[in-house]
Image 1: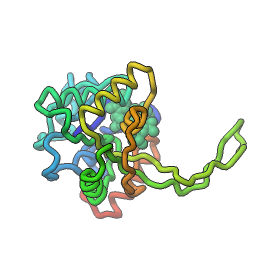
Image 2: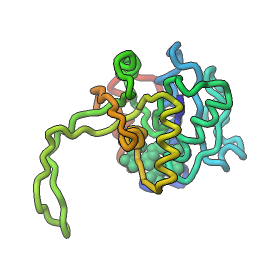
Image 3: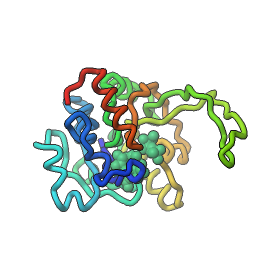
Amino acid sequence: MVIPAGGRGQRFGAAQAKQYVLLRDRPVIAHALAAFLGEPRIAGIQLVLPGEDIATGAWRELLGPVPAPLLPPVVGGGLRADSVRHGLEALLRQGAVPSDWVLVHDAARPCLRREDLLRLLESLANAPQGALLAVPVADTLKRGEDGCSSGTVDREGLWRALTPQAFPLGALLVALEAARAEHRQITDEASAMEAQGWRPRLIPGHGDNIKVTLSDDLMLAAAILAARGEEG
Ligand SMILES: Nc1ccn([C@@H]2O[C@H](COP(=O)(O)OP(=O)(O)OP(=O)(O)O)[C@@H](O)[C@H]2O)c(=O)n1
Ligand SMILES: C[C@](O)(CO)[C@H](O)COP(=O)(O)O
């Protein structure tokens, strides 16, 4: 699997990238990783980090002793999609084959429930075109124009995309390379695959699998983990 952690967290707005910020005494990224440790179907976890963080070795102090199956990190790219691509290429160099399933999970999502991960993994037996965790949109959606509401968007059939997302490694790499070649901005793996004509399965997850994007999200993540009684 690939954990893209190569971003700088500009919207979060801290001096430190948000994946390193402490959440209940552990960096956000350590929580994201923990959801996958001990899952026997995950053969290797490829972290993707900003180049300078690999150079300084700062990530080692943050994560502590590297738990198996964590692979040595590789350098990310300018966009999330570039970082994921670098992670996939690294997996291939280390013996993965194009037909292997690969999961991609944001380092900035520290609250993934084990039950959601298991549901996603189990869905793959019947998901030849891949799958992603997602949540049906529950709010009334407004279209904004000049600070005013100019219409209500029908939420029927709309889902919020979460991670992990799972695809055959080779096909995902081809889809990400195509998006790059065509200068298409994509925000998740599923959108790269959709552009290739794939129809990934939407696997209902829980909305508490939040992405830490803005500074308030950290408080929310802490409350979610505390309510579950999770350790630090
Ligand atoms: N060039 C990038 C950009 C993002 N990510 C990772 O992708 C995940 C989700 O991206 P996002 O929330 O957009 O993170 P940032 O790019 O760090 O945030 P921002 O857009 O606010 O700068 C994060 O784990 C982030 O580290 C990455 O690996 N490489
Ligand atoms: C893949 C993703 O988590 C989908 O929600 C992604 O990181 C989204 O990034 P965004 O640009 O903050 O929507």
